[in-house]
Amino acid sequence: MQAIEQWFATHGIRRVECLVPDLTGNARGKRVPPRQLSAGTELRFPQVGLIQSVAGECRQDLVSETDPDMLLAPDWRTLTVQPWASEPTAQLICDCTDEQGAPIASAPRNVLRRVLERYAARGLTPVVAPEMEFYLVARAQDGHGVPAAPHGRSGTHETQRSPYGVDAADEFSAVIDDLYRFCEVQGIGAAALLHEVGRGQLEINLDHGDALALADQVFLFKRSAREAARRHGLTATFMAKPLAGEAGSAMHIHQSLLDSKGNNVFSTASGAASQTFFHFIGGLQRYLPSALVLFAPYVNSYRRLAPFSAAPINVEWGLDNRTCGLRVPNSAPAARRVENRLPGVDANPYLALAASLACGLLGIEQELNPTPPLAGSAYGRPYAFARTLDDAVAALEREDALTELLGPGFVECYGALKRAESEAFARIVTPWETQTLLEHV
Image (cartoon, rainbow, N blue to C red):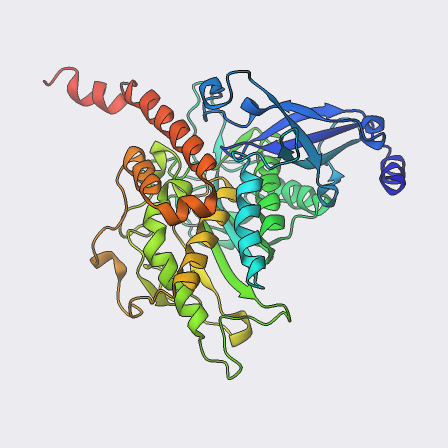
């Protein structure tokens, strides 16, 4: 603890944000003075703080009727300076336990740890690399946005698409510069950045690494992007389909597995694809449709999953084939990996990584074989996913092997929360209904 005290003193820290990712992937928690952490003071937080709908409704019915606290256990490896605070502030991600030290089942970090521990029991370590797409939109009083450029060279709205345009990305340089600076301070491995297909849409790739560390980075990156955009009068949105007629936003996940010696087990010593590689793909094909609600967690998420939109509609796999839900990029044997293109960027990164890795692990354990790789377009193949949030929840709850791996308590809680969000949406009369039906039926 002496080293922590020295770190606080060196950086002049006056307050510490103790952060907990909730089920939506948003930051909850409390701010405390550094001395409270240095002294080892017990940190407590209401369990219901984890179980909120995306609209901010705490679900008291999903915790014990006594509305208990949980304990926050700091993960000191995540301690960093918070780069945009008005006074010297640190941030620290915490794990959630009960009074006896057992993991809280509904805490997303614990769900991912549960899957990683099962990999560790087999002597395997997952390596992942997320790619996140998001839009910068103009802030508006009515809550709606239009694709817009910050105060760059032109200072104008982006009215024409410029897929992968370098000059188009330069229009966002002020926001991007702040975002890269925030990432560097927090140890977020932000690598390549490019302008994506949509107007005002960007993509950032993170360096590959440990799955829990990368989930933490995605969690912190989203918060950082929102703050960087806000400084320039914009909003960074991670909706899966924020704008009709524009491309959806995904969080593609590249995955590989290392053995205890650091070798990629997806390749044999000769460099050929291994049986483990094929079983991993077989597991993804078998279980991803059942895990869809963890990759598409909101009613809006299902608008993204449409053919001919760079989003998957099934779990076909292919070599360097972006029409497939599962793409195997061209690579050297040591870098052989599987890209899961199903998750939307609106997914909770801890849960999306946990679910994707869980599906692959079940394939390895059950020695499932994949279909032959697809050489043509997967958009000509049948749609393989649930069409609605309710159907996706039911699909997860029917899958016993996946429920056991992710945790029965988590699946029960998450399913109830998603059903409540679906019911809330069902009570809304949408603009399409009033515009189309009001005077014509």
